[in-house]
Amino acid sequence: MGFPETRMRRLRSSEQMRALVRETTLEPGDLILPMFICTGEGVRRPISSMPGVFNLSVDAAVREAEDAASLGLGGLLLFGLPDTKDEQATGAWHHDGIVQKALRALKQVGAARKLVLIADVCLCEYTSHGHCGVVVKSGDDYLVDNDPSLEILARTAASLAKAGADIVAPSDMMDGRVAAIRRALDTDASANTAILSYASKFASAFYGPFREAADSAPQFGDRKTYQMDGGNVREAMREIDLDIAEGADMILMKPAMPYLDVVRAARERVDVPIGAYQVSGEYSMLQAAFEKGWLDRDRTILESLIGIRRAGADFIVTYFAKDAAKLL
Ligand code: PBG
Image 1: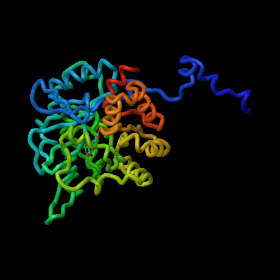
Image 2 (image 1 turned 90 degrees about the vertical axis):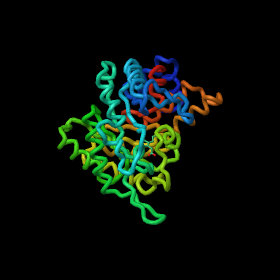
Image 3 (image 1 turned 180 degrees about the vertical axis):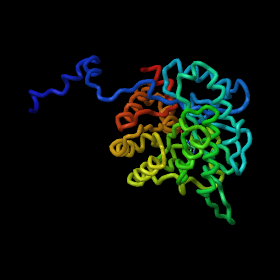
Image 4 (image 1 turned 30 degrees about the vertical axis):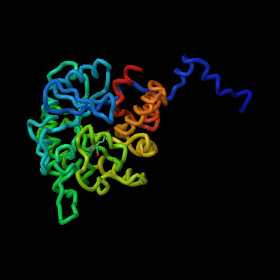
């Protein structure tokens, strides 16, 4: 039956009607707020390329977590800015590493216990060269060496779990790291710590502002030998299959907006929970447009997030988490 018997506009006639037939929902509990933890006290240092995002010392992060909990957010994703960096990424796995300290502090406060605490597992914030794994140099050439990186990543994950992470989230894109991490967690009495693997992470220009926020830009070369090529969706499915086979409890897709077809393909293929990361560049370009008055802030934030949910993500990591929760 077509027009005039069928009139699609009937079901759009009021907000109540639209709410009744809405297929995709968005709730504060679907949102994960990333946080960048730095040393010091009372530090709340703005990140110039990410208006509204800050480097936070542990005490400031605790206050931010209380805010996040009162807004009903699903959880936090923690990144660390250590005071010193070295070739072995010592700050990543040290008992007194900055994220380990933050996790222990967060576990002490009641409000933060309402949140799922996710710790990013990667070496780039902790290595002097800014690569996500161990680097072997030969002349002018260099290699991000896969297998020696696994042991450090596994040690990092075990240390973060011990400090209180409910979930560890490897974002390095080394082969075999999920299995190595699972083994390390299980032998270290952290069998109940879940793994959220960044299974399909593309080598993206949209990470630019993050590298200022986390002080993690590679000092030479790029990440194209370990992060995925932007044209590949079948390869993304192989990455996902491998990570699940190695023991990933959930997978994370990133970036979100330029890769929504990959999120959809993953949703149709696997049954594990799927998250998508609306990354720093997605956030910053929207902020820039808001500042210029070119886009309506509130509506655009919610539309960008609903689009990611509709593509198939169960939850979203987003720097807009608090703003969105206030709008919902
Ligand atoms: C660490 C990591 C990055 C992001 C999350 N984990 C940066 C990168 O791979 O260079 C990017 C997140 C964002 O842009 O918001 N490897």
